[in-house]
Image 1 (cartoon, helix red, strand yellow):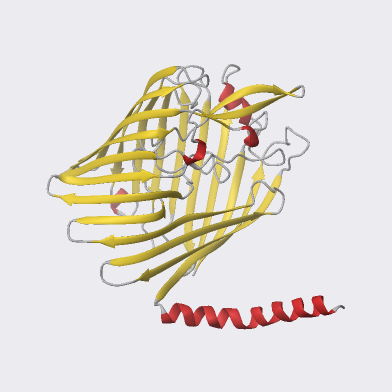
Image 2 (cartoon, helix red, strand yellow; image 1 turned 45 degrees about the horizontal axis):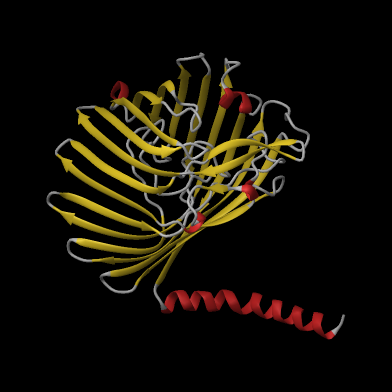
Length: 408
């Protein structure tokens, strides 16, 4: 062993010994609160893979640490990090800063700076107005996982409502799974050939504004977004005799409404979105989308602690290039046991009213002890129509995911 290797080994050993206690001392000195979760996941597919690079089983692990530090009574720092390692898929192995925010609170206003996550929406099947953060498609296709977004946010809190203004100085592209992963789009997306309508590319500065207010049993929000459309238009192009999908990010102006009304044991939900946007060739494109529905809960079913919720929603979108949910009906059942283990079950079905294709989903979870949680997720397709280009891609990718989570 030469001197350099000896020195490197000593450095590694010293760091391994000294860094943990030094980190603990630093947390104590700066009063940093630390928590998070780690998980192990097994992803299993019912059918044989469609492509030779793919597997039938994928095993991965994640860690999601969270940090919080109160600088004083008015200022704080929040951080949430994410890392996944997948043993079978290099493209599913990724890291992200979900949040890293400096927050300042005054009596009737707030100021937030950094990388953050913002959620807008009320409906179960699809959140049309949730436009601030880019979707993390590497994690899931249901648009629930989101990437952290660099932002400057100002919030004004008044009797007439809450007003949020966002300046978004950097755009984050949607990531896609590679040839070895499941489920994935086919052809594979050429992420290195991305096209922007804006000459500023990913440095385009976007703006968003939202007003929200609660009136007794009614919650309502009005929002607008001006900038780079989060969902790219995947455009087929031929390169070296092979067809590939090139992501095209266009400029858009979006105007949204989200509302929820409590009517006894029933929730009435609505999301509307009007887009003044562009197509892949940058020609003008105006479109409209909406989700409307309800959730009725049978509270204390049969005089027990169990709650049973019935969900029904209609989805409409006249821009076919962006979504498969153009004329669809969603029904679901939510079972909450309200036991010490926080056991829950959600079963959903999306029925395409044009061709009869059906997308089924299952989500179940149960706590085990004080720190553990078991999660089961399933997604599968039935009666896929020959002309349903979205579902045809995934009809051999029915899956079930079993995940064990430890909270610390």
